[in-house]
Length: 140
Image 1 (cartoon, one colour):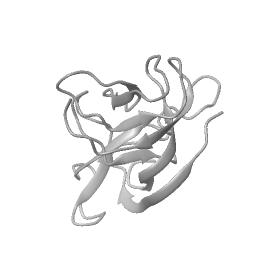
Image 2 (cartoon, rainbow, N blue to C red; image 1 turned 135 degrees about the horizontal axis):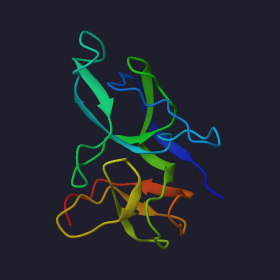
Image 3 (cartoon, rainbow, N blue to C red; image 1 turned 90 degrees about the vertical axis):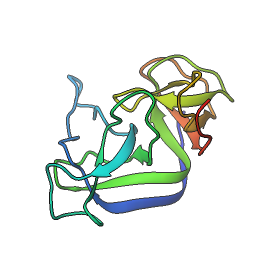
């Protein structure tokens, strides 16, 4: 059972793309995905200093935090940047493993040369919503 203990979150940065999609079961696709902060491309003139939220550009990208809502383009993204949060698993991992994100923002075991952005607090299989502790660990 996934749980959250958010310590710090932001909700003033808009989404640069539409992250409101749902799957065939009407479950949000990007809720609980790791997201990055970039210079706004599509929502110019909004956000804090021109910043916007988007999915990671590559597996090796550091994240600002984990998306909590399903914003449409230009809507404020609720992002937990510190603490314990729910997260989407992209692969199987065990409690205690350091995790990185893929280009869809889903979490998987960290590999050499990539940013460890979280530590698993629950074991998970691919597709699970699980619990992670956000960390700032740098490249492995």
